[in-house]
Length: 309
Image (tube, rainbow, N blue to C red; front, side):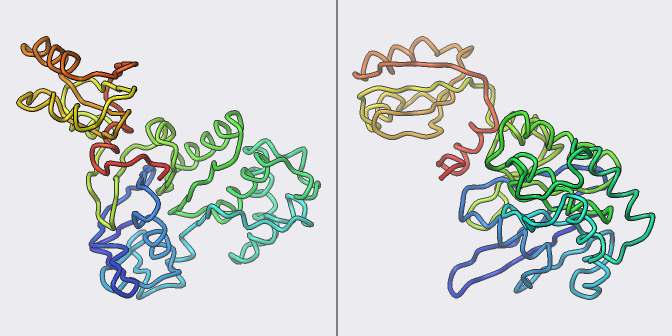
C-alpha cells in the first residue's frame, strides 16, 4: 500500500536520507523510529509529497507520487506533529473544512463527520470552538482531520506529544481502528513503549539509513539472550571496559562515567567469573538493576544514544 524504494535526499553536503526502503501493507501499522536528525522528518516530507527525493520513488496503492501526484495525494492522510487547527472554528466546522478540501460534501460528508466525532468521543463538543478544547481533545480532533476523507494510507508524526496518558490511550485506539479498517499507517514516535504496544513492524533509522527492520519480537531477539543490566554510581566508563575484557557473554549497550547499560547472558556457564571480574575490579558501582531486553535496549545498541537526544 505504501512503498518507498531507495529514497535519497541531500541538503548541500549533508545526506539526510540515504537509500531508505520499506513497504507497508494495507491494515498494517509500521513504526519509524530514530533520534532527532536521523532522517525521519525528511522521509515523511518525501512520502507526503512536500519534498522531492534526489532519487528513489514512492507509490501509494500502486499510484506513483511523482507520476500521478494529484491522484496519489488523494489517497493519503497526513497528521503532522504541529497541529493544523483554526481556534475559532467548531469541531464540526473544522472537519467540514478539511472534508471540502478533499472534494467531499453533502450527506456523505455529514455522516462521515458524525461517525468520526463519535469515535473520538467529541460528539458532545461538535459545536464548541476549538479554542475551548483541552490539549487532548485538540490532539484527537487534529487526528480526525487526516481521516475525514477515508485515506488508504496515513502518515502520523508524533501525534501523542503533550497529552495525558488517558488521552494517549484514546488516540491510539483510534489509530488501531483505522488500521483494522484496511488503512496502511506509518507511525513515528519518541515513545518506545508506544511503538512496542502499537506497531506490527518497525524500522530504526539513524544517519539516514535503516539499521534494522522487523517485528518487535524479531528485533528484540536480535539482541541475543542476555538480560539488560543497568549500572549507576561513581565508577569510570573505562574501568567497566577493562573489567569486561575477555568476556564474550557481555556486550556494552551504552557506557559513560557513572552510568552503563550492559547485555549479559546471566544463564551462561561463565557468568560468575564475569560478575566477579566486574564487581571485584570496579569500584563505585552503587546501584544495579536487571531487566529483560526491550526495544529501548535495541535502540541503544544500534545508535548509542537515547531516543530523546
